[in-house]
Length: 158
Length: 178
Image 1 (cartoon, rainbow over the protein chains, first blue to last red):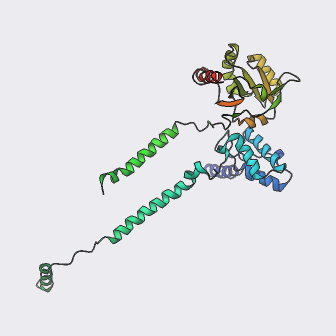
Image 2: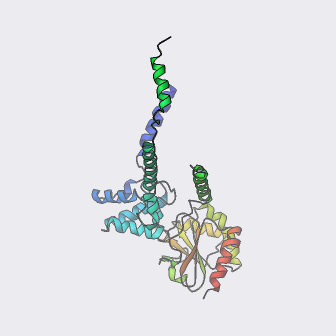
Image 3: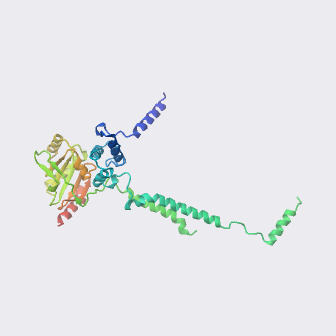
């Protein structure tokens, strides 16, 4: 195997492993598979406050582990997903939700891109419509032009 | 098309530049605490290093106090420590500690080596009180007013600059409050 191929293989493997979550440790996992799945779906959408672009589910930070354990405890104690999420939000704010809720101060965030897109489409449509309506047909020939044209067409001399 | 319409893209672009320029001056790692102007979350923890004594959130009420989240494993806390010692010695602050997931033995060594600026230290061995406080990393310091409300959260070590420019004026203002 050439060196280049080996490096490439390592990269591919690294990406494959890095892509899946390795942070959850065996001792954290709940005995009930259903509850574990719920806990994971919650922590996957919680931002780790230490390494902010990772979810609590992905992060190796000790604080993320504490929050994973806390979420699992609360899920096991029978709380709904909503209650568990609220518990964390009360402590860390809405910032920890990787999916921002649709509320007054996030309207721009959710609607903004669509509003800009619609505006752009409207402007484009308006321009195209206006251009289509423009009279870009040449005005008819005057009487003298008509005579000139006929004379030219009938003139067969080389 | 009039002249203004031709300038519009440029103006929009300049608007974006201004928007991003402001955004770049903000530190995204500083998460504003949701506790500001709210009561300090209740806790009742064993006092570190003193058997049979409890440190409770109720003790941090009635006057302006500081609650410093620290740990012997935290390197930035070691940087902050001399400043806290100096302030406590000069009686400029009433300082409580929250030992965040620290080992009793290591904490004891740390304090005997570096000195103890704290009136009392709550031992948060599980880290649950830290989560209640919304701690994102050590050190963090909460300023608590007479009513027991959190008024400010200092993220990162307190140094002379932070003390003189932020905390001292704030504490003076809170102490003047009725």
